[in-house]
Length: 272
Image (cartoon, rainbow, N blue to C red):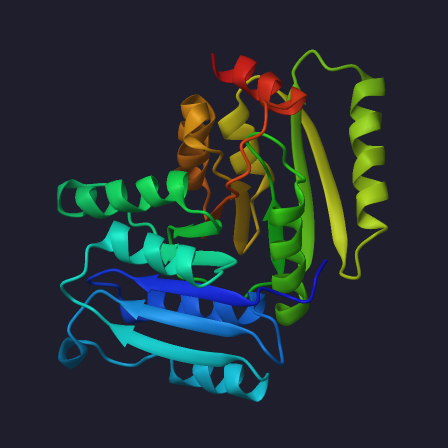
């Protein structure tokens, strides 16, 4: 796991509730590189209408040597402003709140999903509740559950929050004991490379979403993949899982356009 993200763009839509702002800034500080990292906060709102609930987290960033800059642009085109800033400033990660889709938020969800598919950088969108105490972080995937981006984010948050990581994997209901053992062995080899506590939960299942939801019980944060727009079926699955889990979910997307992996094809068979 590297030293952290050099430049994070934190996009606050209008309106973003104060507790969500605190959560997103907290995660940005957890993920940023100490002694040289930069968090750029972009508010799509009028500064006179915005309170500043993130001041304690901004002080924590300053104590860690992380620069924080804040910009207000209530009239900006969300898609264009975020994409342009990420493209022109070597952004490593775009972090934003993804609200539940309803009539009042449909345009916001549409913009964020467009950015998820087109950003040149990694992106992570927070779903569901604000983050409170973090002692267990679940890492799951809808394509390749153990890619370096999700693992790196989980480890950095776990270090900052003194939390445990739980790797979960759902196999097909017909999986043999040998296949289950191979997955468990992979988790053990992966865990041996980490410097934070970890655990492994592997289960066969007929209903993928229900079982992943059950395996994530007791966690405070779930990290899962939101693959590129070329894999709509798998992206929809990630959204469904995020809606079902009983804790905040961080949907992570990397812009690498790879061929579908074996594990992704297996999951596609689950939901086809």
